[in-house]
Amino acid sequence: MDLSPTYKEPSWTESLKDDAFKIRLYVGIILLGVVLVSFPFFFQHIELRDGEVLNDWVLDQLQPRDVSIPIFTIIWSITIFFLVRSVQSPTLFLTFMYGFILLSASRFITISLVPLDPPHNLIPLIDPISNSFYGKSFITKDLFYSGHTSAQCLFFLCFRRKLDKLIALFCTIAIGFLVLVQHVHYTIDVIAAPVFTIICFYIAKKIVNSKPISIIEPIER
Image (cartoon, rainbow, N blue to C red; front, top):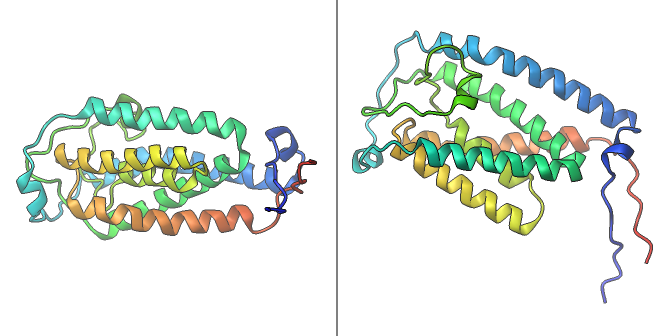
């Protein structure tokens, strides 16, 4: 017989009464704002430089096709699903937010250190929502590593329910494959994305859980 108590996560109302939670939330929102404001300046800058074109056997086997609609549908469907879950879980929202901030910072570093030109036969990805953060021109050199794949992987790591994780895992695999079909990323970009995401996720968890945000009371039976 399982005698372990069943725990209930604090609601947003309860969490916002906790000073430690509020500090993390407000600091995270400020940092996220800085990241989003930095996007167009950074990506327009890297678009001006020259880089290497990699020999990619996998891409050579894939006939380039415009799969912008499936990519857009998957990305923003899972994002809406995440926001719905976040209404129920402040910790989920906080963990993803810090994970995304760390992912963005790490991509700033890796993209700066590894200048790459886009793959041959790249088909521009049509995503009016995502592209609005990147500036006036379409970005092709935000390579190493894949931001689309890493964001989906972060959803997978953050979700707690088994079905949610399975949905996010499917989305991660699908996006990783589709960005290759679109030829907007190299294979190494997609392979590296989960590695960096796992690291950023565990750092984000450390930030969120470094001190108890609130007292979680066991449910009375």
